Length: 342
Figure (tube, helix red, strand yellow):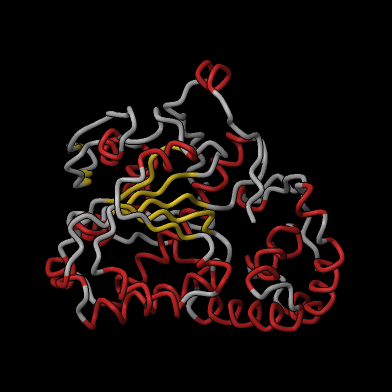
């Protein structure tokens, strides 16, 4: 049964935005996809994924594109994703605190930091600096996967709606930067491989087409044979969105991100913080280079992970301000009002 999109209680992540011209090119495939799913949609009307499919053409396109617009395969993928979300209660993972999020992030250097030129949130991770031994001391693979899923749902329900309101159109993809400096043989242990493969499989099934582009920088030679194996876990559409550089890719990053949105350590001009300790909330985000620790997008995630959202509570919907000012945007540039996300 279709839900009432004018209901004031409709969550922000279900807000309907106008289709882009690219979306409208696939209206026939979308109609066929919804028609094929009709029995499933009617039987599972209370599920969040079903509501998204009913309301958003782009939600349909994500599954269709992930299966090269093969209706039968896209329907099968949707049914599998719906089953996983139901059996693992993914819709409700934000209802309760995830205290270990803070513990996990003590040994990572990662976070959300601003927006790219197309309005997509930027996620940065310094993978080469990860202390895997400390992570394994704190969490097993199931706990790590649960945390990643917790963060993915937070992005879907909080970060993307905030980015959409800021941009004035639907934003449902990330720009991801992975700094591989420091990557070595200690990152190649079997249990890390098994976790990475499980995470990749989970993300492609539950969050298809959420990655706008991923940029790997400072990639060492040893990674070349790693990529030969890891790339087999990814579908063709995802592999096309990954760019790999054996240097800092400063110029390439600035083509996508305004210099005031990019941390100085990555060649930008932002120096918005340092190590941050919040005595009231006991927030600690370990970031030796500053910007990520200070950014409100990640600090709010830590606060949220300690108290939980709850379906009967209003999720945080902060309209995060960009360090790239309106004046700079007008003077600057090639800023795009809406990106062709495919």
